[in-house]
Length: 122
Image (cartoon, rainbow, N blue to C red):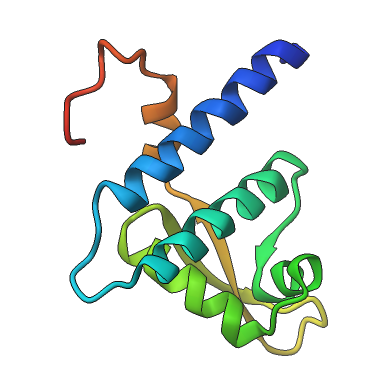
């Protein structure tokens, strides 16, 4: 079981990772506002992940108060960066489809490495 201190350090490490991935590796044509939205969205998604909530547009919209389009606008660049993966699943009603997201396994692999083990620029 994870101790409270360990969970705190893991959250801090994730925040640092989010900042580094988005701000240190800007995508051409991307605005500073877009990068800030991505970091904020990563924080929300990480908290949802820690609470074992499904990362769907509907759930994220419900938590943030953003429209589904606004959520997608912040999520799509995270998919392009390889931070998130997307799967099409049945929606909660079981009749249609929904976009569901997960953090790429690489994200958590990188968080487990000590700073000495990480390669610069990766």
